[in-house]
Length: 74
Image 1 (cartoon, helix red, strand yellow):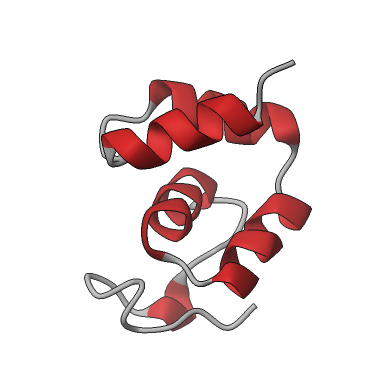
Image 2: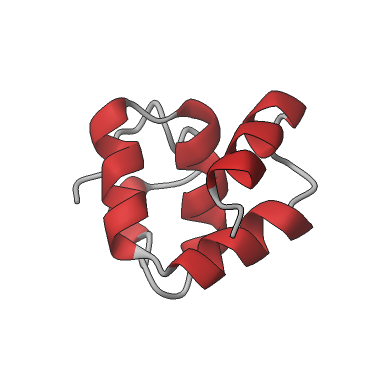
């Protein structure tokens, strides 16, 4: 996926590694991403990784965190 500069305003999107920076990508896309970007995250990362990042995140907005915790309930 080609990342938008507006989504990753604090870094060069060309230098983002989808494996190495997974937590950063997940948090940013879930908080500020467009529908297609959120779908990409959902399809790219495992459910367990998403759950782990969301549960342990200190940077996700409370509404975003609550929504995704509901969506990822077992």
